[in-house]
Length: 383
Image (tube, rainbow, N blue to C red; front, side, top):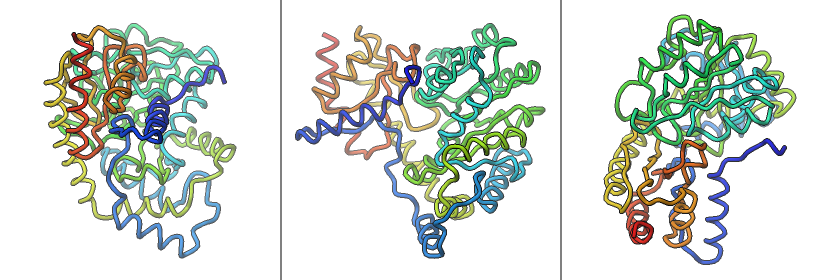
């Protein structure tokens, strides 16, 4: 248990809530959650499912009808044929990364992952006794994989490679050439690749490339996706993985031994999400792009701050190195003195030092308020 980490966004959220209970107003830019309601047709599908009695145990791998809908969706969006037997449905997408690392990494095995990156990658690698092998994501390369470091660090000890594009926390997107090089090495050394594509729909600039769609990668790729972000369903706890059938069978046994199954009414709502009107998704993504531009422009005007415009997800990762303070101190000062909850870059790994992460999944009014409040605090830190 001492090796198990946490997700700082929830810790900062708890601290912010405590300050709110004391009467302080907080603008929440720490948590990665769309501020939109789940679309009505999805909620209606869940209500019908509840009324029809979909409140009992279901198959541990997921309802056959949802697995079929997911297989069809992935076949269409990743342009590679997928069967329902390759799909495992879980309560949220996080169990897929937990189960995959648990299934593939023994004590002493190396796992390559992006840093700064989603903190649960490193946490679970440590938890199972594996060896975390970070690949720095550098601002000067658009926060893409440092391929020179990657090629030096991959070895026969590597049992899993994790990639995430569009990426949390930086908003970076891996270029096709980067993904093709990662795929070449994975195929040659026969290393599985966990591709975290939860933010696929939140792509504002450039091309989305899934490593699963590249030649020869079907037997090596494990796709992670879910409904939380694209359909504003964070509280529904509905995610899935797509992987070779033998691994799917192992993950199903892990589901049997842990959560048993995913709530049936949530799964039936998931079918409505995939097969129903996609207009709410497009509308939400367009709004996030507008907010991105507003926030990047505002951050670039703040003392000691520069901000690269993210190409995906709904986060900005501004550079605050000119302030000459640890990012954790800057984040604390912004919370205490400005009433703005943000995360230090180090919440996402050692290579996040010198950065902050802000979620722009909040209203325009609150984003403008946060920028106004941050200015005097940062000016004091810069002086």
